[in-house]
Length: 285
Image (cartoon, rainbow, N blue to C red):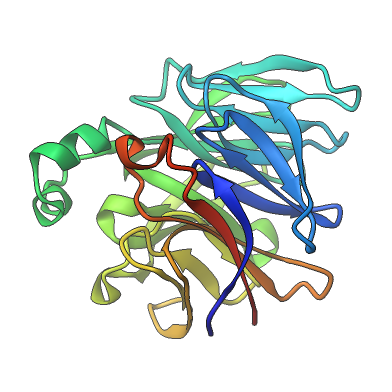
């Protein structure tokens, strides 16, 4: 499958979510959360000067936004008022990134673990991947009462997350381990029993943003212009070829089978922050 371009001129798009008939996403370097319809009409929803990333919604309809640089989660209510929702600076080792918000309003938030972009200037990617200490950190959980907890330890650059099995299994993309890792989810939201759900190493995929149709987990490669679908155990279910490197993906559209992909020529801030070269690409599955 190949893609078409829906929207151009982004700084760097992340955290795409299909919600109420539009694709919502964060743009790191335009410093805002945007929504775009299937015709390409874009709207700025909220400005986030400290760089937005993961998105999700509380049961009351409020939007949660990860604020990367100050390692916080922000809440935008129905009236558009933005307030601090949770401070993750005590748990996050570097910039916060992607987030999953479940139906109960629990938010799971990952972080870089360390300064990956500085490391990429100093070392080659294969050397970084072989260093098990690189990006080693934890996933934070913010409960509906806004209390902050450690959800999982010893994860390497936790990135996109999805829920499977009616919410009983959480799968997280460990970007620097080249794998999708599964956890059992307890009634209180705690995670246990970490295990490999699928390795992405054979395809050279450094899993970044992910999405799912309930059976296949689609993985943005972060190293190549592709989104690769995996079944549990690592079987490849399909590939969507993109025009630029794929960093995040979401399923949605009127038919529920449209793949939206956030793409860019690079993830390095020095190369993309001012270039406005990132795009939203789409494919029909």
